[in-house]
Image (cartoon, rainbow, N blue to C red; front, side, top):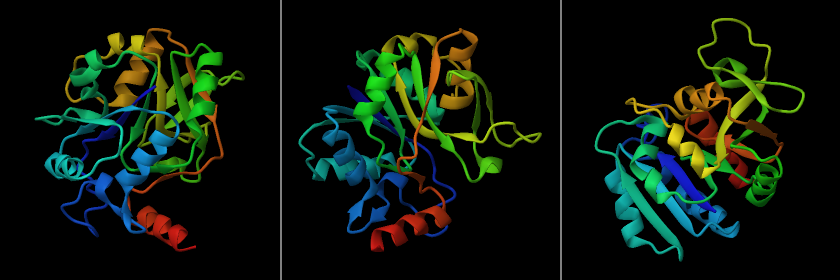
Length: 232
C-alpha cells in the first residue's frame, strides 16, 4: 500500500501563532507532526510514501535530508499552486497500487488495515473516511444513502441548512485506476473537483464511518487542543 501526504497549502490559519512553518513541521510533544504521520503509516505497513509539497516545501525537504525514517519517502515539489489534487497529476505515474491520502494537517489514529479491508471488501473505487462533525458550518459534508454510498457533496460555505452532519476528514483510499479521471484544470481541489468528477463518472464512492481519533490541527484553536491532549 502506498501513501500520499498532501502538504502544499500555505497554512494561513495557523501562521498567526507559528509563522513561516509548514503544517507538517508543527511541533507536538518534542516531535513534529510529520514524525507522527510517518511513524503511523510505517506501523501499518506503508513502505512507499510520497509527500506533496508546495509553499515552504524547501523546509520539508531539508527536514527529510537530515532524518532517516527507515522507509522510502519521496518529496514531490510543485512549482506553482496546484491545489490538493493538482499535485496528483505530477505523481500519478508513480502510483501502481491501492493508496491512501492524508491531508498534512491531520493527526489521527484510524486503523488503516481495517480501512483497507473495508475498501477491498466493498470493491470501492474510493473510500472516504467520514464522521459526525460538531462544526458542520465550516466542514465539507457528504450526503449518503442507506448503504453508505455517496449521493452528493455539500461544500462550504453552505448556502442552506444541510441535511447531513457527516463531514469529510481528509483521509481517503483509492483504487489507482481512478487517477485516469483526474481533471487537468489548475488548481485542482481533491474534494470539490476530483471526488465530484468520480461521482459524475458513476464510480463507487463508499464512506467509512469511524469514531477513531481524527483532528485537523490546522487552526490555532485545534492546534492548542492537541497540545492539551498530549499534556494529559
